[in-house]
Every structure is written in C-alpha cells, then in structure tokens.
Image 1: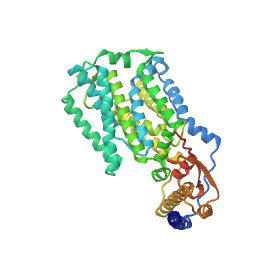
Image 2 (image 1 turned 120 degrees about the vertical axis):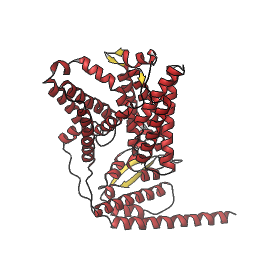
Image 3 (image 1 turned 60 degrees about the vertical axis):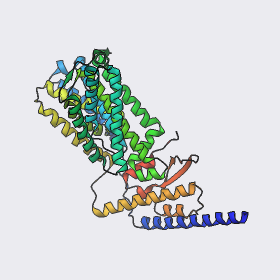
Length: 443
C-alpha cells in the first residue's frame, strides 16, 4: 500500500513538473516577443507637489480671483456655510460612485437610486404614515438591492457595467414615476429636516458633517485595510488579482452594493434638505458626481480615486458655480462648468497615470507584456504552493527583466508569502507596474 501511495505521489509530482515546464516555455516565448521598455521620466519634487496639492492651490486661487470682483459675497463665511450644507449630498453621491470606479466598474444608476430613495421616504412617511427613520432605513436597503441587481447582470451575464447601470438607472426612473404617481410629494417630517439642514455645528449644517464622516470612513477603508487594498488591486488588474487569491467577483459585488446603499443615503440627505421629493431633479447630480470623482483622482493621491480628493473636488466645483452666480452668469454656465470640468479632469487624470494613445504594434506589445507578467506571477504561486518546479522559472523571468520588485500577496489557506514579480516585464504597462508597488495586507 505504501509503495502504491509513493508511486501516486511521484506521478503527481511529474505531472506538476510538466505543467510548470510548459508555463516556462510560454513565459520565455512571451518575454522574447516584448520590446525593451523606455525609461520612465524622472519626476521632480515640484511636479510631485503640483500633482498632490494642485487642486487645493487652484481652489484658493479661484476664491481670490472671484473675491477681487465680489469681495462682500465671496469672503463671507455664510456663503461657504450654505454651500457646504447644500452640496453635502453631492459629496455622498460622489463617494458612492467612486467605490465601483476603484474596482473598474461604472455605476450610472447612482443618481436614479438617490431619486428613488428620496421618493420612497416621502411616500412612506407622508402618504403611508411610516416613521421617517424607518422609511430612511428601508430606502437604504432598497439602494443596496439595486446595487445587487447591477452586480448580477454585470458578473453573471458578463455585460459591461456601463450598459447594465444605464439600463437599470432608466428602469429605476420608471419606478420613481410609478411610486410617486409623477407628482412632487411635500410634507416630510420636520425630524429629518432638522437632522439634516436646520441644525448646525460650527455654523455649518449637519449634512456637511455626515458627508465628512463618511469621506473619512471611506478613506480609512481604502488606505488602512486589506479590504480597500484588495479592491484597488482588483481595479488595476482583475486577472492578476484572481491569481493572487482575491475573490474578484465578491469584491466587485460588494462595491456595487455599497454604491447603491450610499447613493440611497444621499437620497436621505436630499429629502431632508428639500422637505419634499420630486421624480426628476436627482438626475441632474450625475454629471457633477462624475466630474468630482475624476477631478478628485488628480489630487492628494494622484492617479487613483480617493475620498479626500473627491471631497475637495466637490467643493472646488461648487465654489466655481457660486462665484459665477455672484458674477451674474446665466444658469446654462453651470452645465458648461461641470461638463468642461469632467473632460478636463479625465484628461489630467490620464496624464498623471502616464497613459498615451498607442498604435497597434504598441498595443500588442503591451498585451504580451501583461500576459508575461501574469504567467510569471502564476509560476511564483506554483512555487509558493510547493508544486516542485525548478528555479528555471525565476531565471526565465529574470532574463526579461533588469530587476525584481517585491510585494506581499495573501494566499488563501497558506501563510503570508513573499512574492516576486518581474517589474521590468510590465514597466511600460502602467496598471501592472502600479500593482507591483501596492502592498496587500492580511485581514
């Protein structure tokens, strides 16, 4: 019996060795077909500071510029206190949008979810006699369900998130019209209005502080927890994240559900600010949320979506709108400002990430480099799991790279293991290169 078990183990070891040799051959073939990457331009200290703090500097310059023409209004604290309170739900909506964007998915249904939450609170509390707080909790749960519906169609059916969330958003708009009978519903309980806009702390409505606390919580999750790092890892390379043991589908589902629930919370704030709900006004906040999310990715933590940057971006854009109103600009300028801000923010974000248009040959080389990096990572996982292959894989990876970059990856069922990825293989592929620089922490 022992001889039979020993023979089985030897046969299994030979099978593993054959598979690893085949992977080594593919890695060498892919590595041979890649060109030497160009050296990345050196980033000077002033450029790093400009990228990190540029939006805050621009915000201060905007205040001074408009204040030179309208000092009484622009330098009045009451103007900013009102602006901070009235734009808090845009901050929350931007944070809701930012979470799936970090995972590589778009959610165009967040504004519709906010509108449905607002309408549900008004209908349940005003027309059906439910407690306003019970209606708010129910609305947030419905928002999470909308996110789950998005996740089912995106992940199970493999449909692109843009198409799914656009369709779901229009469907939710129809539900809003049906639930509210296409009418504006007023008379929301004063409890909610007091808790959102009338009660102030340091002269600023409580809605601002709710948004600030949520922004700090989202920042902490992304910056200091394994959950946030894994979500960032998924957004930058799903296949490599899957190889590292991250449950990519679960992370994307959680991001979409969280987006729906937070968007519904924005609807709670929106209802408390207005004391009523109407079927169409929430849709106007989708463009400002997108503009703030992408503009925020250019500051504080340049090159990735981040909560502090989104927080600053919302109020930078709001300050611009407020200044234009003080200067007597027509109402259509608001759409021009938000639309132009979105295009400008995406352009700056692309420049910061170092992406440039590629011709067909460069695109093919980038794909081969990404595949080579993925295969190299797969070989390292085989070695970490004790599959018994020789060090030739490390040599084949080293032959295509001048150096190795280290980063930690959690292996399910195994202790934390130091992994190595040939950084030069992917040095012209910015997403893979950035993944190598991020450290994933154990929960």
